[in-house]
Amino acid sequence: MKLVKRIFKTIAKLVLGIIGFLLLYAILVFFISKISVNSEVSQEGKEIELFILSNGVHTDIVVPVKTEIKDWSEEILFQQTKSKDSLVNYIAFGWGDKGFYLNTPTWADLKTSTALKAAFNLSTSAMHTTFYKSLKEDETCKKIRISIEEYQKLVIFISESFQRDANNNVQWISGHSYGKNDAFYEAKGSYNLFYTCNTWTNNALKSGNQKASLWTVYDKGILCHYQ
Image (cartoon, rainbow, N blue to C red; front, side):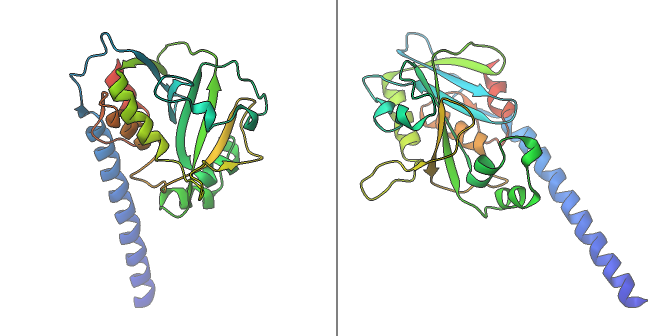
C-alpha cells in the first residue's frame, strides 16, 4: 500500500507540475507579447511594401518578388511550384517545424508524435514559400512600408534562415506543397515551445526595425501591434 501511495503522490506531483508550468507559460506568453519594440517607427515615405499574413495560427512575412535589393525568383524558382506561374508580385516566407509542415496538411492529420517533437525541440525545420499576385489588407493581413536600408536587413535575416548546400544554394524539398504556388525548403534551427513560427516572423520584423513584440509564440502577439 505504501508503494502505491508513493506512486500516486509522484504522479500527482508530476501532473501539478505540468499544470503549473503550462499556466506560467500561458501567462508569460500573453503578457510579454503585449510589450512592444520599435513602437515609434514610422512608415511614412518609405519605399518598399510588405505584408504580415496570418491564417489564424501561423504567420508569414510577405515581400516583393523583385526589388533592386533582391530578386527572390533567382533562388526560389517558379519551376519548383506546381503552377510554375511567374506572373506574381509577392512571395511569402514562413519558417516552421519540418515534420509538422510536411506531415500535417490539416489539423486532422496531426499526430501526437509530431506535436511532441515540435514542442520539445526534437526535429528539424523548413521554410514554406508561397507566391501571390496580390494581397488584400484585412484583420489577418497587415500592410507595412519599410525603407531600403530596413529591407536589406530583413533580406539578410530571411536568407540566413535557409539551410544551404556546399554551393550556397537553398535546398528544395521536392514532392511537397499545399497548393499550386508554394514550395518547401530546408531551414536552420528547431521549433519548440519558446521559438515557434510566429517567433521567427516576429524576429524577422525586429531585424528590419519594424514594430514587433518583445517575444511571442502566437500570431496575435504580432498582430496586436498593428491595430
